[in-house]
Amino acid sequence: MNADEERQNRFVVDSMLGKLARWLRVLGCDARSISLENPGVLTALMNEGCTPVTRREKFREVEGVVFIRSDHPFEQLMELIDLVNLRREEVRLFSRCTLCNVALDQISGEAAFGFVPDYVFETVSDFRKCPECGRVYWPGSHRRKMIEQLESLTGWSLHKGDEGGAE
Ligand SMILES: [Zn+2]
Image (cartoon, rainbow, N blue to C red):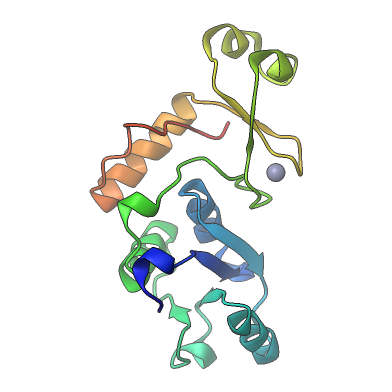
């Protein structure tokens, strides 16, 4: 692994680990979801500077692969955080579409009108939209619950600064 400050967290998460990929995107990590069945694909991705994440036994000993043991998404997330030494400062909560893995655009309340429930439009001012699928994200109860889950899991304090939540 490179020096921490130069590191870009570009993960390629095996398609069998879909929930883990989504949680990584919640944290703002670049987490593409691809089947890593083929060793050639794995090697090509590593040559691009990506970090493969998989549970496939055949890649357990491969240098540079993040090998996940657990079959529970939260435990998988903790394994990954420990293995790559992901730090709180690297987290960009709710900056990415959890489905498409692309960075969200900040949009105005007017632009969100019609895409969110009326009560949200009236009470929220922070909207983000996925340029890929058009999904609109805003801070809400669902997001708060995810923050609480992540905080109890990681021990990080995540409420300050970037609040969020995918609805
Ligand atoms: Zn999207």
